[in-house]
Length: 250
Image (cartoon, rainbow, N blue to C red; front, side):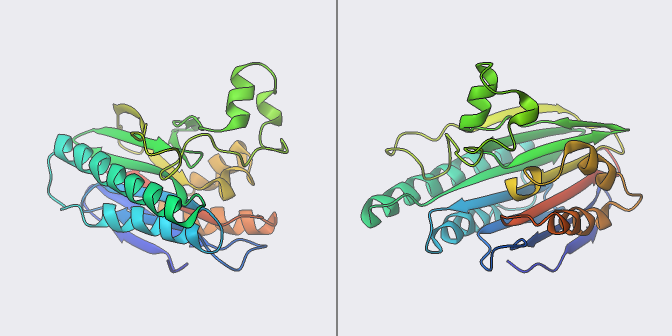
């Protein structure tokens, strides 16, 4: 996926997306989906080594990119679930053949009729900026999050934990059982801004800095600013973000 921003302004949304290999990697295993006409956005972060991560995240991108634009909300949600489930099955099979896991995290945003649905697996995240308040909408499927939930690690220490990169759930991971995608829904207000990002961003920038950069007057500039800030902090992983502002609520 190119690191050239995909910037589109439409009647309902103002949005932009960008990806970068990061400050220390030459290969990018992140991908994104940026489909404002369909109200469909996603970030996928591949894992598996030897370019297998790029295969996994690319399969998710291609599957979501093939969904028709004008589907009702319920059908769109069903298509997203079904297509990611099919990718999961294919990746589990490929991993068994190669004797090694081929997997990817994913976070998906669907915007329809004044509401959103967010589905995710792994530690790619979605944030919502409403006014001056930044909220992390997703909850990581990670070892560190489990340690935080158990009271064994303080939330402020989670990002610097030595096992912060260990995820507990992913597309393509496991023994072939059904994929467990988490989902949350809520109303959308005009001016709400959503950030979908890979952990190369969320593990590099603190929430306060994310909020400041996400709040720039023109949301189309936010991905450039967020990634530039991550690179300035020597982001060790690939960095991807999709920013969507609800300029108009149906």
